[in-house]
Amino acid sequence: MPNPLSLSLSRTRLSRVVALTVATAMICDTLPPQAALAQTDTTAVSTPNTPPQTLAPAHQLDWILTHHILPGFDRLAQTSATLAEVAASHCTPDDPALRDAFARAFDAWIAASHLRFGPTETDNRAFALAFWPDSRNKIPGTLRRALTEATRDTLTDADTFASQSVALRGFYALEYLLFDNAIQSEGTADQRCALVAAISADIARTTAAIRDDWHNSYAVTLVSPGPGNRYQSEAEIRQELFKTLTTGFQVLVDMRLGRPLGQFDAPRPNRAEARRSARSQRHIVLTLTAMEPLALALAAGDPALMQDIHAGFAKALKRASALDDPSLAGVADPARRFRIEALQQDINDLRSLITTRLGPKLGVTAGFNSLDGD
Image (cartoon, rainbow, N blue to C red; front, side, top):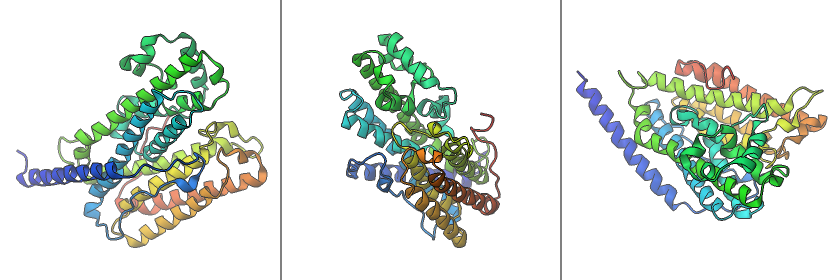
């Protein structure tokens, strides 16, 4: 028989989550639109909510949910809906309105992409939004076939499009359509326009599903551990959140930086993420900016550790923002490459701090993640 005290605590937490969720939505609705900015302008990256030094460990999970996770996915769904709306009437690749909407939605995804658990992983939604790295170069071939062979139903029926290869869906496929000259010469203008609209609408549906699942069920799951629930204890929840943090560092070090760096005598600049839209450097800045509040919140109750974590992020962010290398083409230039390698080392040092000090404080380890075995 359920413990009445546990039920009371769950109801209290649930009401708090609902109230804070409503407040967050109201605040988001009143925010002014962000000014149009160049996609390569890393100074335009907004600073997210950061936990106060006085945040108590007992409140850290509530803070992470209501100030970090829910607002991030709300923003992603909102910007993606705008992208779909714009793409329905502004579908030529160089249209400023389309490119601006694409940049805002892509920013929102990168800022939330480290939270790869729960609703993000359901039905392979993360891969549907972000099929990267595309190590076998499937995206351009899949796009070419779609531009010459796709039926009207494939592009206009939501369920049919959602059943297509992930190489045809998401932000990286859309980037090809907007920024790759070779793909822009495939098919007719009408076919390309229809595919831009279809991918954008699919992104909006996928991000809305993630947001709705968080609000309708997973938010309660994250703050209501216990027998029969997804998480048996708060320790398991902290384990999940710590794993998302360490996975985020893995993506930064091994993929966003490691892939284009390659070897000194064999750099791979064409492997840089989102290089066609010159967003490679921006994604590093966005990811670091988004991950810092989560790391600080998990360190709640240890002001010295919070300060060291903040200093580590500040150092890495300063170097990342100063690269002046939007597509990381500098990996092929020995002088510029040194600066990128130094950034990679800064992030590795920060990852070591998180692993050796934050992990033991929480009593958790990194564990396996969705990237293991790929």
